[in-house]
Length: 93
Ligand code: SF4
Image (spheres, rainbow, N blue to C red):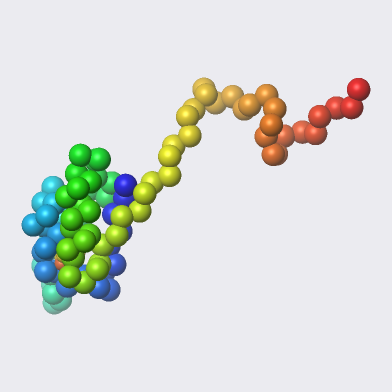
């Protein structure tokens, strides 16, 4: 999972920090109000419940979770023998 912050919406309430202090912190910004900062962009699954709570309880709905696509298994760098869309056309016999 990856966290996305909408900085136009965040107003630094810090509710997210209360839910998941391992992931969020609120930092003062010079000349402006405080805003959330991510301590980790892609928190581990063990923190999912806390991150979901932060998203749910953010009063400004400034947070969302984006599920990272599954990483395809690597086969040592060799291309598949057949079935690829970009491979050469099979020879006629
Ligand atoms: S993300 Fe939401 S809860 Fe966290 S500081 Fe910003 S507005 Fe507050």
